[in-house]
Image (tube, rainbow, N blue to C red; front, side, top):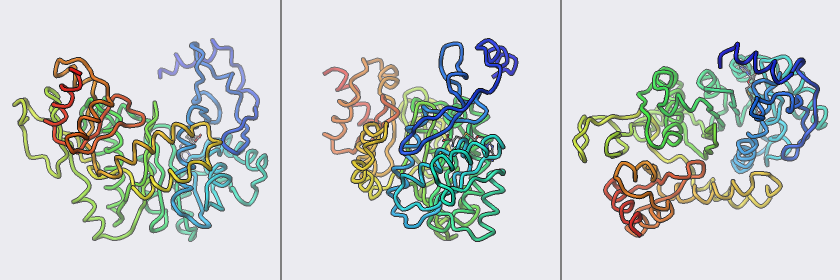
Amino acid sequence: MNIFLLMIQYWSVGVSSPGELVELNEGKVRLLVYDLSRFLRPDGVYEPAWSPVFYNPAAVFSRDFSVLVVSTLELRNATVLDALSGCGVRALRYCVEATGVVKCFANDIDERAYDLIAKNVSLNKLQGVVEALNDDANVVMYRLKKSGVKLDVIDVDPYGSPTPFLRAASWAVRSGGFLGVTATDLASLSGARPWAGSRRYWCHLILTDVPKLVALRVLVGYAARVASELDRFIEPVAYAIGSYFIRVFYRVGRGATAADAMLSKSVGYLKYCSVCGFREYAHWFDEVTCRVCGSRLDYVGPMWIDRLVSREHVLRAREALPSFSYMSSASKLSKLLEYQLFEAESGALVPYDVVQMARRLKVNAPRVEEVVECLKSLGYSATRYYGAPTAVGTNGPYSAFVDCLKKSSLS
Ligand code: SAH
């Protein structure tokens, strides 16, 4: 945002000082944060980036999801690094709520954030359990690795793109450990700002009708290539899509041969025709003409073209969910796992947006559920997505999706 506009807005809502700290609860922890009511935009919406220390109450879904995922990674006596911690909320929650976690580091480069983390550690009586650090996340990751600290999970939750931190995170996490990564630069990742996305994620991007689902695969594809530079490979475990973020968890293993195998099996392209909406995953981009309508065929990639969720993990998370019923996102998480179980059972699904495809084919948009049922009745796997309500994923071919869309539109 233009800095002058920001200053005028800041001044016009009457914020003259950073404000005092207020106490609130999230999950099972108590938190001191800067008084949210002092950082309201003219439309009344809280703007977390204006607070001296970042805390976004709306991101509770991302954090609830993360606590559930970490709890179901089958960890024992685990250490977690929350590399970009803000007020410390993730580290505190992992150490208090996540099964198997006994020690957390909460790091932030900002001194005010560090002070607030220290206050929040005391407030929750977690001295010795959660350790506050105040350095650049990359420095911290390389330093902890060098000093022999075994990091089972590293959480990378920045404001914007996680790319500056993924190499160090892939290096510092223990073999077989996990990374949780958030991206909020969805315009870049999804092809709405193709140049920014291309230079950050080293791939070719175009805007498709399923921007968040493409963003997810571009992010994971990038993570896979960064890990492979270090002779490491990744295995995605779980993901979540929010209104302004995407988040993935993946396991990082060691081995050059396994890294080679991952690249050849799981990283490729999405062929995409912007005219008729034909699409297909491919290991290589070798066609220039759409085989359905004859228009110029485009592509997105490299991206992850393999499964994004682990079946064992979804099953464990579903089983564990009742013990997390206190979470404000419990019902959202239950829906997310319900959809992801279909996905986990069927491998990589090709996503389509039902509304935009109906517009392309000049038919009325049918109910999303009906298209899913139709594809299943033809013997294909199909699912809806939590966080992309008008999208359908299927392992059926383009022609099956189109048939089902048309059929469902008439009924
Ligand atoms: N994870 C937090 C949100 C963090 S926002 C939550 O769930 O609430 C991103 C944070 O990263 C900010 O507090 C910012 O100060 C910090 N930050 C930015 N660049 C950093 C860097 N290079 N190293 C460590 N922290 C950084």
